[in-house]
Length: 312
Image (cartoon, rainbow, N blue to C red; front, side):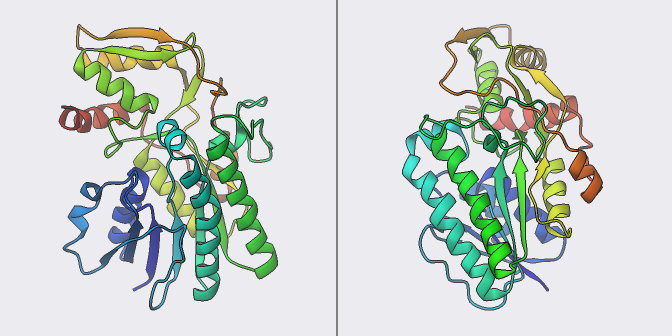
């Protein structure tokens, strides 16, 4: 039985990855310090002999006894409300945490996949975004702590690959949604669902013409799994290229939730908020044979069922 360490295991994406690797017959070690994660996301795994949980901050030295075959580094605050409140922790987990886990992978002769983000492209001047685009990032803006932590993470990962010959993989994750998202994490989909369910105004920043591309979590996990077991070591976009304006997305949520009290409201656009976001997934199709299968209507329906229970 192969063993995989998943950091950020109690978070939205990390918990779904734990589920995936358990289903595929792996022994899973989940690691999290719970500053944004929740044990509720993985409590169903605790009775399993194939699952082990470590409460630990990967910014500090990481020790895992025994053999380790794979590492997936998903520990990080990942929403604007989180990394604006925890800027230092965000930069430490992207730098010190990544360094610790790359060192662990080297010591264990394990393959490591690091979770990067579409935010490395910043407010892009190229659309859609391809992996060879270097980005348009403000390093000292309010989003810089997250953007630059992830860009440094990619650079450090490539340094370990090139200098030490370490088996590395880099996934650039675009907007993802699904069950287990935190209701108050500040991202557009949880905000819209919770506001609509409560009959509040759905907060749109700016004129609402900015775009996003939403990928259902099940599709994303399949893409990450395919990348880990591929032979490709350069960054790969994983996301859904079905682009929609925030205005139209808000209307879709209103139609789905059907709360007559809910409506769209508008507030000023935050600093450095990206105007467009859409992945070019040509590379993922070519090297992984991957593309998303779950359309937004179906994904939103499944996610609504979760939020109906989660929103009080």
